[in-house]
Length: 412
Image 1 (cartoon, one colour):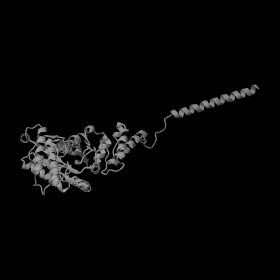
Image 2: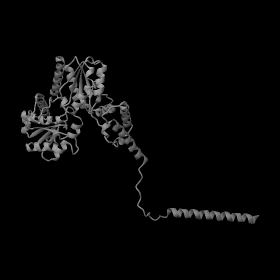
Image 3: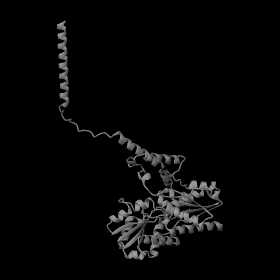
Image 4: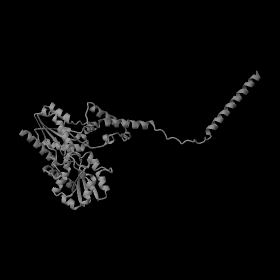
């Protein structure tokens, strides 16, 4: 029996010794450095959080692109709500990742003022007489309130027996304002349907457009389908009046606009007169939009008008560079060759929206401010970011055009 026990104890001791050796061997292998791998190390994989951030941003970009369209559908209201809700759900870091065909962080993120100060003028109870003020529109809240709203209020004050309502022709802008600010603005069809539903008999359309261009033509085309739904319809003149045949044609409207915008620009620049600015080497450059439409001659006519008034240090340009002599490079040369060393840029546009803030006064290298500065031809380049609609004298011109349209109805 004792031999069996002794044998068992020996076996146990041997097993314990083997286990210890095995443990020591493993530890030794683990602690001994291995030979460096022959292949290059791979980059750290993208984390799931990073993938999710971009995926969420891309979803919002797609929702914005879906409403960045010129056609309104039955789904538009729901799409606007969905885009804003998705944007609000993003973190600040995720919002910076939003990038689509037209989408960017500024679509919802840029502060353009308080939309609650604007009146969309889309109420019913219109009555029998309506003045529909038709604008291209802007998503810049402050400009919409001051420039477009200023014109609308002036027209309403001058015509208390008529109801003033608003229509925008740019559905892209309507959707932007609705999605971002919850403000609903009628497009042309909605505004005209509202007029019909309210029993309007006499309708005046007052465009805030600068000229008889493409937007004006689209407005005229839209009203054609509704003319038989009203007893009388009249379309008032845009700001610059009739176009005329060539660059030499000027009229009372162009003269009044030239005087009004120049006086405002001179005053805001701190000069007592245009001559005082000239003597100081300062030139004023008014930047319009430009167009391939035949009405583009209006810009050349405005330059002629400035010369006719003796405004030698006032120049007309356009973002699109149409007509050619209004392109930024051409205007830079004209101002420089005339000997002016100081430049004040101001928009020749009813509203101070995207073109005024970015194309004219922006910091990108292709903005007019940047290009004038980069030319090295001028001591200073300043900007005045303000639309024409905020100028009282311009508002009075629109009021006069509306009055002429009302008179035309009474003469029929």
